[in-house]
Amino acid sequence: NDLVRVPVPVPAMPQHRRHGLRVCLAAALVAACFVCDTCFANPRDFRGPKYLKLVVSPGQFQNVIALGGEADSVAIPKRGAWYPGTYGAAKVVSMSGEADELIDIISKIYVDERNFVKFLVQGSAAGALIGQDGDSIKAIRSKLQELDEEVELKLDDTSSASPAETEVILRRASVNALHEVAKWIMDNQDVQDKLSNNMAPGYDSWIGGIESEIFVRLSKKERGYLIGKGGGGQRRLSSEYFVGLNVDNQESTVKIRGLAGDVSAFHRYLVQMQNKLKLEEEEKESRRLGTSS
Image (cartoon, rainbow, N blue to C red):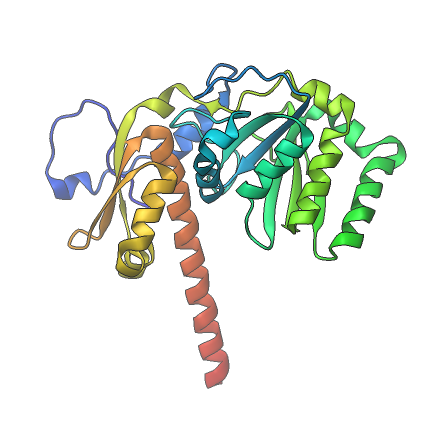
């Protein structure tokens, strides 16, 4: 991808030369990230009695924002701060309160029939979730299978942005399965004690809050996918990623403008989109060749 402008003082150059400048901004942002304990956008005095920490997609984060006054027990990261270490962009949401209140909140965040869900727990408490001889995790998996045969649960301490944390991952989770896993985490006192001291939702870098803009070269098909019907896709993505988007069909580029962390997160989305479209084209061509032979 052609990343062509970063916010550093450089002499003015012609537009066509700007488009030729290649800068790996996205990789630099991810490499600079670290866990920040003081980056609440809306600081809360977390007093429990229950605690949950979630990694959410940009669309799910919009559901958090839509909660408004209902979410007095929820903290979100400041603008420009995203959860690093994942292929797709994501944000962390921390919440504290009564168990029923937190169950109600996550029901409004995850609204699909099937959901991909990530909880975060301290790595030092992951053993408590597994239990002696794996008894605890076997029990919750058995309960999930009774509720929903499609759901998959695993603990992953290798893909987390922080080496001190473990991701509790649910795939193809129904609402009932999601509730059971949330209760499982909230009912484990060792997990709750450690979570209560690690509720900051920000995974930030010093460069994430700097105003920035980049240009990315896109094919005609990629531009159409980005813009969407009647410009709806472009408006939705601009809102979800907190960036300004300006598609230039003559130059075959999209200009992404905003805080550097938000710009980097949207660039990660573009890479995903381009890989998806490329794979679809390859599969289509493979089917065509198979049919013709």
